[in-house]
Length: 173
Ligand code: NI
Image (cartoon, rainbow, N blue to C red; front, side, top):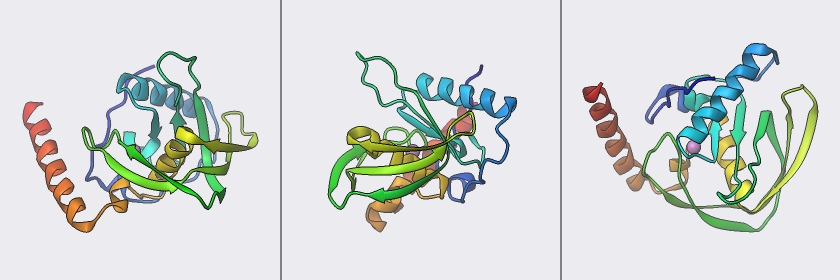
């Protein structure tokens, strides 16, 4: 197992549609383990493969709170099949945008179909914080970032801040 490098915005891999998973093999399973390690190490609750520079439709999540048992989930090729009409606002963060948080309104529950790591077709109902997380991560697979839900002006400001942030990282390496 190893910790993968996070891709910070702006980056092309974060803005394009990820490829469908076709082969569920050993290397995919070890990649998923590395994604979990990377997510936990960075105190994240969800991670999509493009965020570690793999344009693949793979999501890992664990939305359990600190005091509760962990609840790791892996979703391959996830598709939203229906969403509630009622929405809820939630303050979201993203590992590709360190230290930026925005209040975003999304449907408060939904059903998602996906493949699990054994290749079984699954359908799961998500609500509450998990619903927020799964929608945020599925967005990543189509190249949609959470900044697409905020105003254009705000988005431009964040983009400038992220460009500066990336420059500073490169300097310190
Ligand atoms: Ni994100």
